[in-house]
Length: 112
Ligand code: 5GP
Ligand code: ZN
Image (cartoon, rainbow, N blue to C red; front, side, top):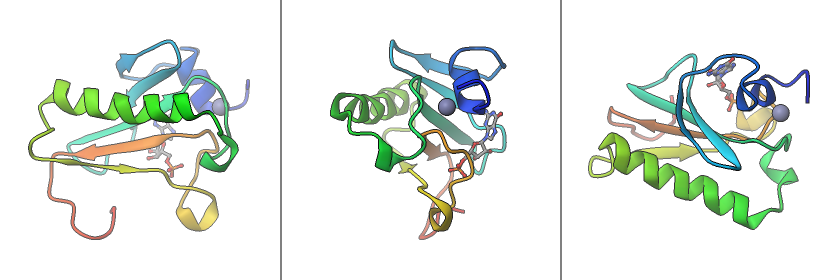
């Protein structure tokens, strides 16, 4: 989708700090990090929210990418948090399915 910022990042039409890429997803650094490590796991295909994606393989790949990145960055032992904000009260601001990968500081209770 031309007017979707994450479609444009996934297709490299606008730059982002890319950490990992597979056939079906990219992992990039969040532009406004909430922790020392704050990544976004984005499918290349456009799904507005989690509710719109029925592709179990893709959803599984997103979780697998999180595990891979955790090991690659060496935050697997200390731990990390995965978040999928969904719709307005979930705090979603970009309507292209994405999973936050947050690590590098103790995360108690709430995400922020
Ligand atoms: P949401 O609130 O929808 O769950 O998360 C959207 C996230 O995307 C926010 O953490 C925000 O900082 C990040 N973001 C928004 N625009 C851009 C961008 O152009 N590039 C990158 N790398 N991250 C972005
Ligand atoms: Zn999109």
